[in-house]
Image (cartoon, rainbow, N blue to C red; front, top):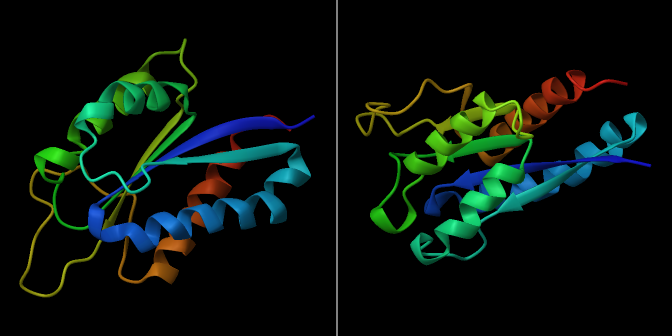
Length: 152
């Protein structure tokens, strides 16, 4: 029997390719590493939702049910229709509540082009990436760290 752990991945609208790569990474990691330890990671994301506000209750419920929360941004918290700051705060609050499954919250930042945006007002990233392959490598690294924290 497998332990199932949900991983919520929130991405800026312009990181749709990374969101899709996240699904691929979860599958590859499950097959290569997690299943050997009787663990399955289940990806949770926002698919084709331009305005998440009407669904915010469901988004919040999904965050509360996840063991891990991964935020990937490229510029800022996002426009009002897709702002991830409240979601990130909720994930941190869930991590602080031992009665909830949340154990890890991570932030990945896509490096801006020279002379463009900064991290002003954003949390310190666990890692930065420039390409989709770098994003996948960072996700794989995080999944490996998270898997190592689980009991065998």
